[in-house]
Image (cartoon, rainbow, N blue to C red; front, side):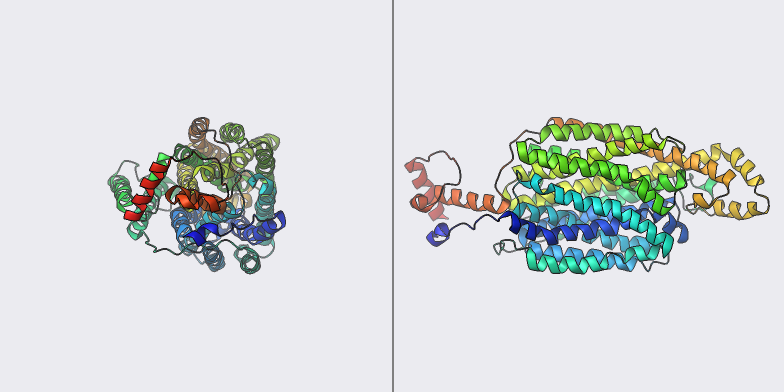
Length: 575
């Protein structure tokens, strides 16, 4: 016992050592983001080529988000139990191999399957990057390095869609899925050689398999219902609204999701190693951050998916042009993330920036719900910038404040918990927005049937071809339509997509309320590793009074009277 107590603490890493350790971590995150964003602008083309409809488009996105959400708390739990570095390398491998396999897809179902596997790796990268960063950088110093994360995010989110558009226009969309492979190999090498984290104490692990199954069932049933309710699988436009929201299918799927969710809570309360410790919700900061993260996820994922559709289906842009046209949103995210990170490190204050960020989320979401196919692009750019700035101010800082107040031994599950609910919010948000878009497009097509008929009549011998295209139910390639027909469908999709953004507004308002009530606790200057050593030292001081003389000070603490100390010692011995 005394040898452990007298062992000197490891010296804090220098800035150069931190940068070296971050290099592999940053490249791993870059691989994850690049593999996702490089496909975003080409998705309308991919779904069209694979004869998929709007539901298929939505599920190509939500399949990844679903498995990301489900796997995130699993990775976070494993991070508290075993080797975090090895887990991060495993997540990179799963993610990139699944991404490459998706490039060989021959139908929407195959693409959705591989995207689901891709999400398992993405969940690991999302959770473990936050946990590993907390191991080597304190919350107060995190802002100093946010510029690096912002730069990586900017290159991946701006360069990815542009690169994806160029690759799609030049060589075909399948090559988008292979571009991340060389970066992944380099990331694995860098992580192995530069990322050195303290060894975790060996302990008996117990995986909550039943909790994993119940969580997967609850989330999957809910998302499948949200995506398919109000639609049918028939191909004709007029048949797509046959399946009512209130039906036996709805009762069974929503009821099944509720039952699975209730059973999940019961299992978590009884499990020795719960997947998501419900005791975390006793922490006010964690609970409110989870609520706020849901709105951030809806804004972030919803914007990335449906703005790309807006540019191509409502404004007739090519994939390359669509990538360029979304730069204002990424610019807002980048500037806000870097700027706020620097201010947090300099002044140690975080709450005002979160409040401003949530206000910008409300403003950006509402303003994007007002756009049409012919809205001045300067205004659209301004709205995208506001939304991006809101995401940049809130996304990372919500994880930061949770890590700041969570016991160090629960950093993994707490960090992944916030990320899980952000991903879950984004997944449900994309599903709801996709369902709303599909339903709105159906209504608008019915309302504009006379205009569509007039446009078809002007096409002459091309009319049968385009009638067949519209009857197929596949996502149309609007930019390839004849002028008369294209204008009508650009208007339809512009109105439909803007309508879907309105769904994000009430969630953004709830996020603002949650952030206002967050406890304004000062950021600690200790890393997770240092906090863990300090808590172990303080525990030893209380339970073994004779160790007082060999410990260095870890912080101010109340003096313990000798009788109480002896009683504590007796209790320790009796164990």
